[in-house]
Length: 522
Image (cartoon, rainbow, N blue to C red):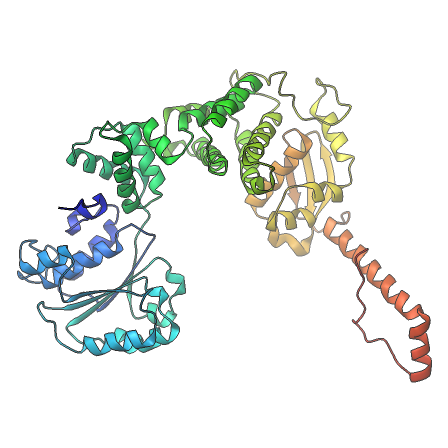
């Protein structure tokens, strides 16, 4: 007998076996128990969370020989054939391969006939968003008023592409991405059933890599069993299989950054380079770990059993401001990785940037930055100088130039361009937003601007943005607008002063059409 993949072997066959989707199971169970199931059901969610599985269980519940209920017997002919995928009255249609209106018309014609074996004819249309617009329109009437012996179950990973007219005719259930704890527990049960010894850390790594999908997790378990060659599954082996750097290496790097020890950071970089990791994914792991640290610093109550002890220890070694700054550097470093000469160089520069921007005061006995990792400061500033001196040197640059040099995108850049410089007192920076741009002022954008200015100045700054209607200096956006207006006026004056243009005006009564002159970039 051929090998059956774990994802198929351990596919749930009853509602009780479905994990992580209690809200959907409860609603469907109550509807089936009262024989009041809606004729058209839409199941949405990411891949591998149970859409097709739930549809098959519903088909069993409707056609079980013991009667319609939420608990099919699992022993009758109908239940057995559904489990084996050969029940004639369960028609699974791949909408990605049958997208046209002719395919839907054939489906509608066949729906008029009574079931061949069961009580209901169940149509499972997978990836239904792939149907063409004309196919959807052809299906609408049947979807709204199907024959009494027909049930439609639609499944999709992209419900936004469905027509509103289709959504209004269906009972929609959104299946959740499965948390790591749920996937980890289920994978542990599967490995126990398969008599495969494993380390708990190995299952945690697989559950994280599954990214919310139980099917992906089971497929990775299949791969890990083959990779181990009959040996117990270990965390190190799974990390080698997945090509990840290992969380312990990641935590070593973060500990070195927290203490500011340049030598330790260098050792971590060498160890990581020896593993030839995916540097983009590694920067993503750094950002993810920093995000979790920030959450635990703000909301200690959200701690879960999935949080490593090493991660929990890092919570006390970073200040919240330092975490925010390092997160921004990691995110920007990952974005700019494609422009680096090599991914390794881009990663190392991001880490060295994190090392350069150390906080002035370490928390709870944290070590001061090593001599090999000097703190960023303006030229001519002494190491022992007060932060205000470094800030004064940075503030000497025109505000417009500082904004242009900031690595900002989107709405955060727009907020910076529409803010005017008011003043600075020590590490407190005061800005004033243009009243016409107050809609840009959100707390997360202010925090991002604060982190970027801190990185630029080489010290932690506290940015306060005022919204008063008082007179303020021009914002970078206003200065740019004035320059553009001056360039435009100069271009129009030059055209009107041109001898050829003046000759046309005098001889033919011609005039320059308003708005037809554009200043060229010099």
